[in-house]
Length: 290
Picture 1 (cartoon, rainbow, N blue to C red):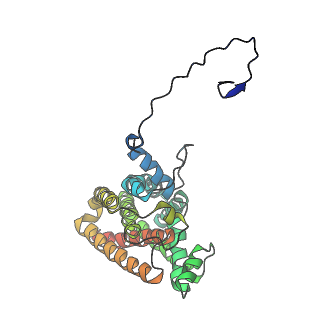
Picture 2: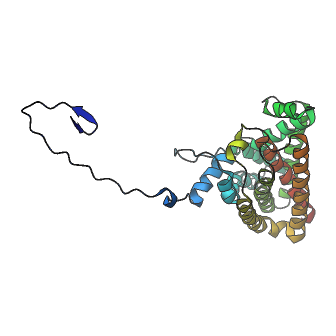
Picture 3: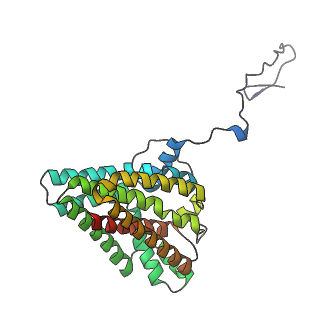
């Protein structure tokens, strides 16, 4: 028998035998020396996890929070720049400031796939509508929203529109900077929940992405603090930014303890809800400093 290119061939008695020549093999790299993903791949993963922005036709990797955390501050700027520019442009074109703010918040909801909006509604329904851990997790997994969820969602949207509109009325550039800075800090800060608590259930986006390593969280948060400072401090001032960070820390600590007591861990909805709550906390402090 002779195998050539994977095809079996039966030789006849008078057919000459052609020696088999092995094809050159590509050098293999030992597993421990395989190249590790770079920041560009981590950035792409963060964009795909937190937004619906086009990222090409490349293969989607399984989300890894350790890698996402490192690139998330930079991805957050890309995610938020379009809505922020829409807010500025709308005001400069003469649109009423709160109308422009509503358009920009709507655009941000589309860009992110309503991740934080859906999360805060699901979390409010689950945490405050269920009597047991199992029931709370079951309600959060339900795509329908109840009274708690609708109230939380509407309040979140109204607070953002009011905050951005009030700042844009006097300085559209400041509104954009404060918005971008608060969103960068909120997304990275909310990952504290994924680091300090394990998944509350075995399925879902949070369980798939895994628990966040402390080192990755610390590096990502450091990037977020630098970017948040550069974007927001020129308008909110050191005092406003500092107050916003203090309120964010209190919000994250309180939400972490609530999740620990109510469901014994974290889920993707609880992390997404913390993004929304932290953004409002940071905005509150910054508005006080403007």
